[in-house]
Amino acid sequence: MLERIQKHPDGVSVGELIEGSGDAQQPGNTLQALSMLLHGGWCLLHQTGQDSKAGRSTNAALAQAVCDGAPYRYISLPRAGAALSISEVEWFFVAAIIDGHKEAAWPDAAQLSLRRLNRSLLKEGKPVTDAAEQLEQLRGLATGFAQTKHPLFKRLGAI
Image 1 (cartoon, rainbow, N blue to C red):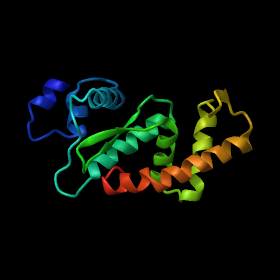
Image 2 (tube, rainbow, N blue to C red):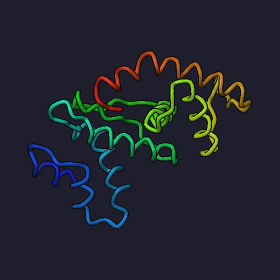
Image 3 (spheres, one colour):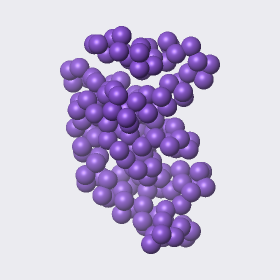
Image 4 (cartoon, rainbow, N blue to C red):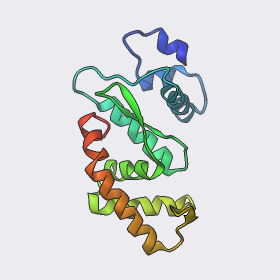
C-alpha cells in the first residue's frame, strides 16, 4: 500500500486504495493498513481546499469500526493534514455525532456501544458495573469532549 501511495505524489483517495488492493476483504483490511500507516507517521490524510468530505468519510468508517470492536485510535484531521490519537469512548462520541445525535444523547450512545462490546469504564482501576454510575461518568467525559475536542474536530474537518 505504501508503494501505491508513493506513486501518487499529489495524493490518492482511500477509495482508490481499496479498489487497487486486490484483497477480498478490501475495505476493512485497507482501512486497518491505512490506520497503521497513519499511526506510524508514514502517511497523512490530506485534503486540498476547504472540502473535508474524504476525511469525514474515513472517520465515519473508522468510528463505525470502533463501535464494532476495532482498535483504531487515530482520527484524521483533514484540514491539518494530520491524525490525532483519541480514546475508544471519544470514538463513540464521534460515532454519535456522525449518526446525528445531539450532545445530550452522546453518553447514552456511548453506553450502548460499551454494552454491545461487553466493556465498561474504569474508576480507580476497577470496572464500573453500575449502569447509572457509568452513565454519569460518560456525561462528564461527554462534557469535556464537547468543550474541547468537538470544536477542534469540526474546525479541522474531522466531523
